[in-house]
Length: 196
Image 1 (cartoon, rainbow, N blue to C red):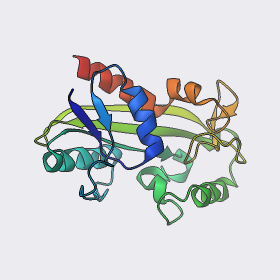
Image 2 (cartoon, rainbow, N blue to C red; image 1 turned 180 degrees about the vertical axis):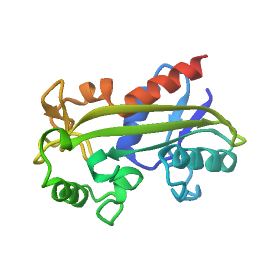
Image 3 (cartoon, one colour; image 1 turned 180 degrees about the horizontal axis):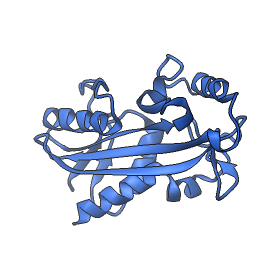
Image 4 (tube, one colour; image 1 turned 120 degrees about the vertical axis):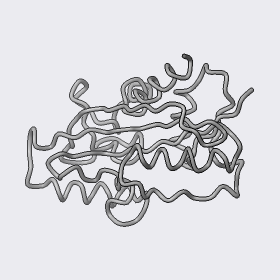
C-alpha cells in the first residue's frame, strides 16, 4: 500500500484529512513517524504557495507522496485578515482563544452583512521527487457570530456561523461540518483528481 504523508503535525487536521481521503487505498499518516522531518516555514504569502512549499519541500526528503494543506479564515471587511496568518492572528501560533478574542474585537463596529467571512483550504499533492501533481481549493461561506458558540471543532469554528443551519461550526456535529467544510470541498476535488 502506497503511503501518503500529510505535511502536518496537527492531530485534529490529520483526523479530518484521513477521513476525507478514505477509500483511495493509501496508508495515510502525518509527520509523526518522521521525527527528523524539518519544519517548513510558511513564507509564500498565499495559501496555495504555503501548501506547495510544504508538499514539494518534504516529498524528496521523506521519499514519499505528500499532501501540503494550508487553510484559514478570510474576512473581507478586515481586508482579508486573518488570512494566511489565521493561526498566528493574535501573535502566538495556535492560540485559538486569543485569535478569537482579537477577531471579535476587530469586528465590534460591524454588523449584519459586514460580518461575512469564508474559510479557505488549499491542498497540493506532490510525488516523491517533489513534483506537484495536483492542486485543489475549497471554500465555505458564512458569517462571524457576535460571541463564541459551541465547543466542537478548532480554530475559529465557535465563531463561524453557517447560514443554512443558523449554527456555528462549534455547535454543529462533526459529520455535518465534514460534509460541507472548506477542507471537505478541497479534498473531495483532490480525491477526484487522484482517481483520474
